[in-house]
Length: 164
Ligand code: GDP
Ligand code: MG
Image (cartoon, rainbow, N blue to C red; front, top):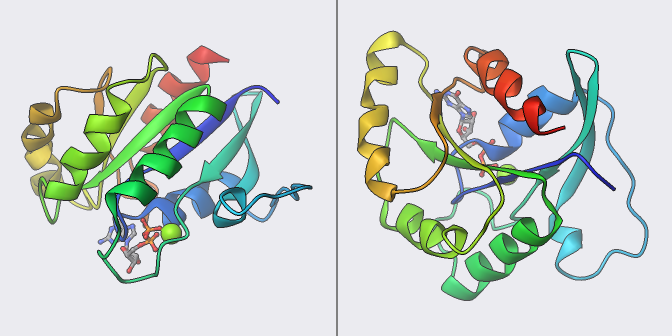
């Protein structure tokens, strides 16, 4: 498979919301799923005539921030291995979180293109808080988006599909 976009980040930042927005109803079915890949959802997306596969990582317990360093490493290393482009999602409502730093530490070992997706930027005011995340020292660019409304996702996709 080629043209794979993996969405990584701590629980509750909105990864699955973005995934659903990018893939619509067309969920992919994967064979021979291992324990780790069972925690991932795959779907097909399309943007300006380019097709790609989106991976929603992290079947962590919904609503829980209770994840362990080992799980983060496992999910992120798999994303780094399989992805063409990595979307590292953070939450502008919550700001920079210690778990974001843990993800960043593993992501820093990747040589794949990484974009920081600053989700829940539902208003222009909230979008102004993306500055916090430059401290992660990671990523080609930070995109404020609202996965709930879809705003900002077009600009993000314009950039992502340049790699395909
Ligand atoms: P995941 O754990 O990273 O997959 O996060 P989810 O997609 O399950 O979303 C976690 C929570 O954030 C849910 O209550 C969503 O409705 C909410 N959420 C997701 N995207 C947005 C957004 O753009 N704005 C706001 N305000 N809430 C959002
Ligand atoms: Mg999810």
